[in-house]
Every structure is written in structure tokens, then in C-alpha cells.
Image 1: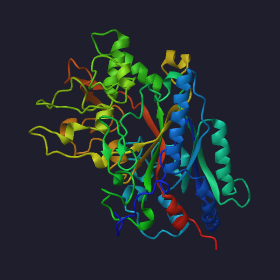
Image 2: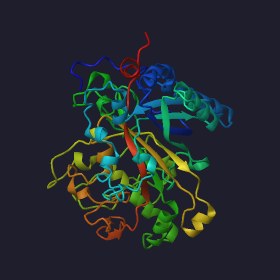
Image 3: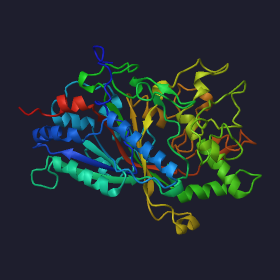
Image 4: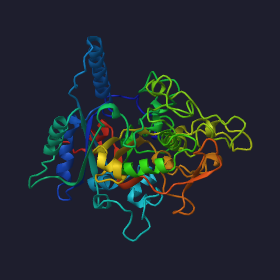
Length: 478
């Protein structure tokens, strides 16, 4: 928390998640000979930055366009919209030469590359480091995030951002390190990640932003996401107030291989298609429709998955048997990253109740890559890369992203501290097993023979408030 009480929250000063169909991530370094130019140019960038107030207005306009289309029984037109954000690494803040105080987050200060082994990334302990693409092993000072409803809008907006810093000219103040683009999946797969599961269902509501949360949607204090606000117990420099740490991950998904694994290990007693679908749901914790298996453990319920008033309204109930996994395995992906009632309402001889509110994050990622082709599906082998550009916002990386990534944390009930299907870490790294995948034989272990989500890079960033950009990071022109 800051040394003095913070001012009331100003939504025009903060930056929220941007509505998007297309998104572009532009990673850069600051030219060491043009740092002051860069700082002066930041002032010209500020008018392009999208505030929370603007995001809320845009969402309301989109909702109105959709309502009008429903009344007219027509397909809603795309509402032209764009958004811009900027974030800095620790190295980027240091390059500016004006930040002398520590921001109070060890993971951010060390950078993601230094924490790759903790995150379980393959080959992290080798002399050459984790198996990442080279760009993410280089210095990165910052990232522009540009969103929009079309490739054209995003391309034009990113061009304006680059023009601010004279990119492409001899006096450019920044230089590109890497550029990645993503888009929502087409048609009925909109909102679903590449394995096919509906994504982003269990986002928490944030006090002061979300005034009408859905049933079952946890409301977290501002300080869970924004630095210096209620529940953020770390002493922060004043310029960090209302900023947020951004965790970025470049994640490839081995979709054909995952689907082949599900078929080969389908729940017995069912036709292969149904058995593989049930196994996938028990590994993830949702059916592909978004219906939670804790509410509908035997078969998918698309109507439930499509209903935000019901799909998130549940907690995991252990009742009097903490070994029961008949509804949802303890190591299912969504149960490990958001254990809901498991640690909050334990039963003897479990440890005392523990709140996981401080471990919540806001996810704002997007998919990248093409759809699985008929040839890939038939062979079970990929010919093209696809996956998720994962983005998470939080006020404490150790409590947020890293806690969820390393979800075997001893703070949680040890009964749920099993290896989940997304992880590549265990006591013996090459031996990964998970129990509870078969509801009729809950103690049987299933060998997890591959890591189907493969990290190829990432970094930790600090996304400052508008006032911090203008009054601290930018160079005032006088």
C-alpha cells in the first residue's frame, strides 16, 4: 500500500481489458541513445491509450448494437473499435533512468526468464535456458498491446503508435524485438480456446469496476488487481498507484496430439467419442460448452454452459469425504487454479480455512494460429502452430500468476495438491500421473504422457496508470 491514503479511484486514469476480435503485441527496446526522446514522445502516446471509462463506454455501445440487431432479427454489424495499452519490464523502467525505488515485486524485478524453472518450463535448467524462442531470451523494455474489431483497424492503430516513436526512421527511439498477433476463433468456436473449451468463464468481479456480478462470481478487492489499493499490503512507490502487473505467456497448444490422447484413454464403458469427451472434461473441469462438471458430471449441458447466471454458481463441496473425486477431480485444471470452496471450507483433519482471494487474476488473452486442418486431425500431428497469447493482470505476481501456474502450493489443502494435466512438473519430471479422471475408479492413476501446452516465451510487465505515464515516466515539455 502507498505511504499515504490513495486518492479515490478514477476510471479515466486506469486501463482495463480491451474488447477485441484481433489483438497485436509489439515488444520493443528503447534506444539507449534516445531515452529522453522516448520519454518526451510518451506524452504524445497518452491520448491514444484506452482508459477504463472508454472501455466501459465501448462495451455499452457494442451491447446496444447487438440489442438492435436482435430486435431486427439481423446479424449485428461489427462495431469499429480499437484500444491501446503500454507496459514496461523492470529493465525498461531502469532504462528510463528515473525509477530509483523498488516497486515491491520480486518476480517482476527478476523477470520471467529467471523464473522459468519455477514455472516448470522445459529445459529451464539447461545452460542455454528454457526452450523459448530467441526473442524472449533477449532484453525487452516494453510492450504495446493494440486491439480492434478487424486486422485493418489494428494495423492502422499500431502504425500510429509506431509513428509516435519514429519507428522505421534513422532517429527511432525504440526498436522491435518481436511482434505477435492473435484473433478470436471463427464461428461457433468464438470464445473457445484451441482445445475447444469455452474460456474466461470464472473471471472475478473487481470491487469498484463490476457493480453487478453474476451469481457465483467472486468479487475481489481493488488491491488484488491494482497496486496501492485495498488489500494490497506491499509498500509501493507513489508513481505505482493504480498500475497493474501484466504476465504475458506465449503458449503453444498441441491440439491433434491432445485429441489423440483422449481417444486412446477414453473413459471405459462408454463409446470412444463419449468417453474421450468425458475424459477431456475431467482433465479441464469444464465441458467444452463451459458447463462445469461439478454441476453436470455425466454429460455436457450446453444450455447451462451458455447461461452466465448459472455456469459459475457453484463451489466444490467435499462434504465429509475429502477423497471423493466423483464430480470433479482435485487436479482438474480449473479446480487447481481456482479451488473455490476447497481451502475455504475444509473438513477435519484438513488445515484451517484459507482464503484464495489474493490469488485471483484477471485474464485477457487471445488465441493465435489456424484451425486444425482435416489432415492434422486425421494424422494426429500438427503442421501449423496454434495456441494462446496468455495475459493476466494482478497486483502481486507471486500471489497471482505464479501461484496459479505452480498450483501445487502447500498453502492449499494437500488433498488437492496433485499434478494437473497442464503442468510439466512432478517429483520425477518424466513421470506425470493424475487420479480421479475415471469417476468409477477414482483412485486409479492415469499416466499423462505429454505436456500439451508448451511455453515458448513470456515476460512480466508493469502497466502504469495514465497519471503515472504523464507525470513520472514521460518527460514534460516546458
